[in-house]
Length: 447
Ligand code: UD1
Ligand code: CA
Image (cartoon, rainbow, N blue to C red; front, side, top):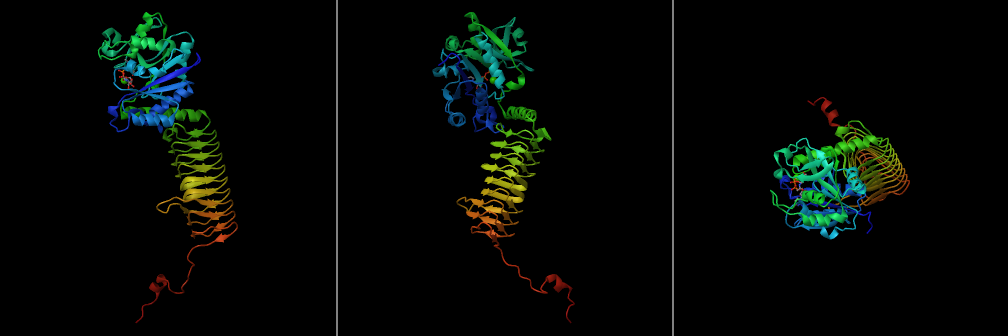
């Protein structure tokens, strides 16, 4: 292990009873990503090399969610809740004096920025042994207060243990800090539990470090990054704050949002420059749009990769497993699922395309349905290039329609259509002269 190496320890043992949920707190989602996933992602973006999460006793769902999101993360268990220092100690097997820096983060404080973590680490590189992340609290109640002498941090005092004079301080402890790997174990093992809560306080590391002649610094950040989530109202506030960030980032990258506050993003939404998003659009997980894409109002997209210069919507629903090639058009009241649309393909009105591939330049008429499900299994519909499917046709999968083929309006297609063929599969029209009921009503009554 090199001296430059870094580790994040993320405390996620909180039970979150105020969420009133069967789901563990750190698995509640912000922009379709669990809170713990946000923190892990932020660590990666801050170039933190190793990540460890401390979960509560029996948190099997948290374990498996972390393994899915980031298999390289080590997971440790804090079996008894004896305080923040005790929680960090649960990760003792991965704490090493060889690590240059160790960052302590919280699984329920999901909005901390990568730049902020980098600033804490930079403080260590500049010579500090510990860098504490502080903030000026609009309401300091409940937070630990930072006791400064000049710009030296001498101690962190928990509210319950503070004097009235100390409680008047508004500079508060976020709980997050960075510490040299060389010192963490020695500091943790010196922490006792002689305080109002009878807990092992991580914050006591500051006084101990000072007594040992170590250098303790403070970095200040905005309160907006430090929002902790303990209940559903705070979860909603964190969601709103994250969405504001995504909108600002999207606008800055050269995308037009006609009514930014009405667009909902996922944490992983990617939109190319010169794209335009109309009002009331929802991006679910896994959406990547190329440049110059237009997403029209009231569309809902998830799990789709869209190439440049495509138009989608208004009122379109795009579901996972879909790719849409450049220049294609998806119109109003169209649902597309697990389908590939070739360049310039058009599906403009009132249509369901599921488990299908549609070749370049093909046109799917209004009201076309791919009948992909027989009640037990799903089957694919394959349509070649330059073909035309007449309105109100049902394509009963599995079925293949060739290139430059033509399906007559209202057909129920159950057999493959060869390239170049015209397929008509509907009842033949019959005209019966003078049998119109309307005509019958106008006839003079007999007698
Ligand atoms: C802690 C800080 C306080 C800071 C505040 C910021 C300490 C002693 N105090 O106070 O200075 O202003 O956070 O929000 O560190 N946790 C565990 N295991 C435990 C105890 C806590 O995993 O045994 C986790 C909790 O789930 C939570 C975090 O650590 O995510 C903070 O614990 P909490 O009990 O909320 O600490 P506070 O009293 O709020
Ligand atoms: Ca707390």
